Image 1 (cartoon, rainbow, N blue to C red):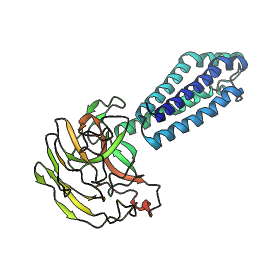
Image 2: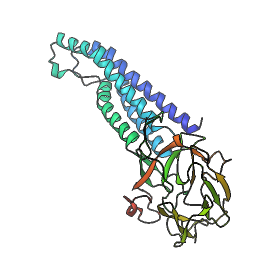
Image 3: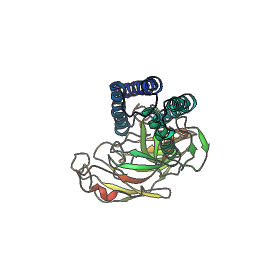
Image 4: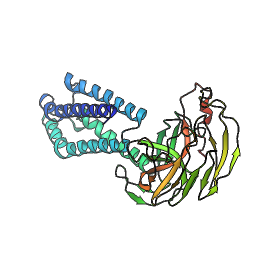
Length: 339
């Protein structure tokens, strides 16, 4: 388990402790000090726990947003379940007791206040469910974490991934519910890294099950012994163009099935070889052909190797944000379709 995972688990445990403190006060101690259930004042301990919970929640979101090494769907399911349980328990066990206590104190029903934790749970539960449904079945945001898809996608790009392109799957378990389509050669796809499914990778689909893939010393790609058409493109100009491995790097327009896209050859060695894609698996390559750990690296634990069909997350469809302006006005790419 990595230090990042330990940090996230620590933040989560601290958040659960804060929730328990707030619930203990709202359900058990508050009725004793406020029989009318009208007070907005709280003792210092649950109040501090509420402030701490907000800070811890933001820290966990930052951890997820920045590193994307924790299953966000799992977190949504856990938080949604906790919110739902709190709401249901309050309605089943405590709400009636609160109303009866308030009535005995002469408090009108409209002035009875819920404990703050219950208010949060009731407010957040439908929002979490909506986000989970959208993220699991429609579109999921994803941040490009490396240079491996240049010049198509840059490090720091935020993109939308279509979750329904290859089938609707249950969150967390990833069990296929409804098949809606099959991956096509040339698609840009987000998938879970087979050696570590908590990590998402993004590459271009090159080989389908049963295909024979070959890359020669000239970076020519062959699929089933047929060379994929390549047409010379412009010299690379864009982010990091002044780095030694990208300075003057050539590009090519490559045709993969119906997809015509731009690839680049960074200054460095060529990863050559020949591979046969097993049944039920796919072969991926980065558009930055000389700077991409992809399916060509079968013996590297940081590379995907052959990717099982169940590891596919969705099809990358559109850029929606890039905050890096060091290399020019990248905002002009916002909204661009991913070819």
